Structure formats: C-alpha cells, structure tokens
Image (cartoon, rainbow, N blue to C red; front, top):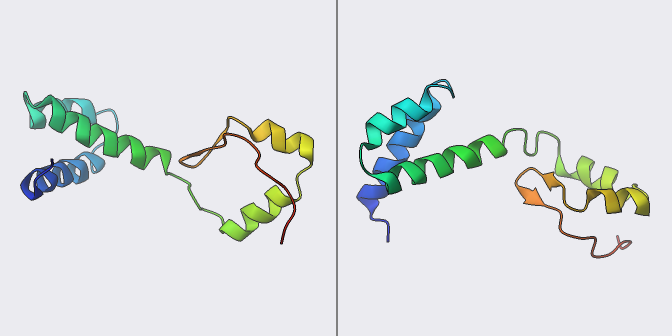
Length: 98
C-alpha cells in the first residue's frame, strides 16, 4: 500500500524528471532513487504513461468518432490490434446506431 508520503515522493521525482531532457532522466532517477528500485519503477511507469498520452485528444473526440464511423468494414478490421492514444483496439464489436 502506498502511503501519502510515498506518493508525494513519487510525485516530486516525476515532476523533477519531466523538467529534464529524456536522455538525462535515467541518470537522474538512478541518483535520486538510490537503492529503492520500487520507487524508480513507480516514477518510470508514470513517465511512460505521460509519453504515451502525448497527442491524446489533440483533436475533438467527435471528429475522431465521425471519421471512424465513416470507415468501411475493411478499414475497421485494419484497426484491430492498433493503439489509439492509451487504448488498444481489441476487436470490432458492432456497427450502426446513432
């Protein structure tokens, strides 16, 4: 269980790491986390999520939905297995509706 103090430390390191160039982050975290591998993994996990969210919802969701609705059945099957932001398209579940 993560304590409020632990979360505060993770948050501080995360924000400090974001201020650094991506190439400098591993050395920074190695020094800042010392022998606490769990702390380092927690911060690295947040940094990974931040990186995968870049560009997420840069366009309004209604625009993306409209584009997806007008795709053909063939195109829809091409999306299976692809990532859209932090989401993974597993399978087409249906078509039509409002």
